[in-house]
Image 1: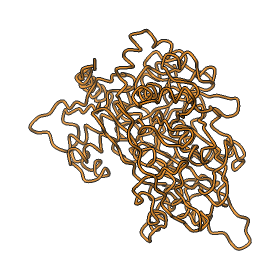
Image 2: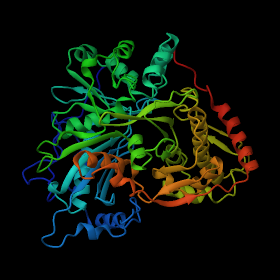
Image 3: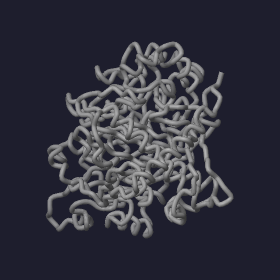
Length: 585
């Protein structure tokens, strides 16, 4: 397969007041690569309308996306300074996710001052393949950063630091000299390298990867995606060996763009998701690289999760801003949830579900198909976590909306599911991209069982939500078996956690409280904390520890017999979905 064409260079001229000098351009990508469609980052997206201002005020008041926080009842008062008062600084978090790019401005209390979001185009070249346009990743992220700062009424001089958090494993390869991507980004959900992983397992390599990386040998991770690009883009391998190409996960790509190509870095949490990084030595591993056929010359420098890596370059902002925190989205959420003590666990309900159990400074090996991963590295101290990744959770609600047209918006799923008292014997296994932890079956496919003439749209909606909770319960059982730690509560975040029906069912199935925080944007908050700690915006972790407070606690209420019956039905449905797709030859 030849090289995919990259979109033509176009620079959108946008000048948000107080953020850029009037003569400067916002989306000045290194090498001039931005989205060709200027509507993606246009002046209309950067200068808020009255409706956008109203939406922003709702966010600030804690009634929309940001919810609220201790001392955050009236953040606008914190932002409007009396004459002569010392300028209060803020931290900007860039949260680049699978389905959207977001930016959030936080103050010293960890309160949301303003936010902006833009959806990201999903590209599906073939069944099981998922790609993003790297130019759109950057242009959308730059656009929402400018919009958030503008909505907050701030200038670049008000920003103490920038923190980056990102969808992990998603793989980008670009030219070192021009910054041009050689291929679309291959997204973490993409399964095109499942056959390569099978061959590596058959060759006996899985124990090596398991021992050094803490990961299973699966196409989920970056290493085989890099190998695929090197094998399928004409001339890529030779250029990589000469040091002419750069590999990076999305954090690396954003850091490169923010600094005009001056930084080619990643942090330990992102590096630990590549199949190329030894989590015990804290470095790229020559033996793993040799097996994968990836030249070390194309890899970024691995740095701690909280330090000043460099500064933004003109013409992005009117002054250089420190880039001071980087963490993969799930590790950032763990930090933002203040799960910084051994035994604390969080789950993020997003496109997928991602559960992390903090294990302290010990890298606990898994006997139950979980991942041992770096939580973060601060200074010389590396902390670890056990992780279980569920590929499809929130995406099943999108499927109900877009595929089956059962709902018009994702918000409607809770009411539809609540229209019936139970699932009516219907189970939905959302294995649209295979099964993740603890099953790791790339050949499983989505399955609905138990349908009768009495089945309604409400039963399907309820089965979809329950399928999310069942998958989470499977992962947490494995975590408890690996760690020997009994779960006392589950802290939750992500878009799916606003669904009260899902959260209550989750508590019922687990038999422990599910706790939702007041500050809901914990992923972005974690990145902000890491950046702020590196720059002295917050003096220490103790300085931010008391900022976490719960918004609601869901206590388990379902009888144990009902729980056992439901989980037995789930296991039967799960068995029907396994091994459905035939492996490619």
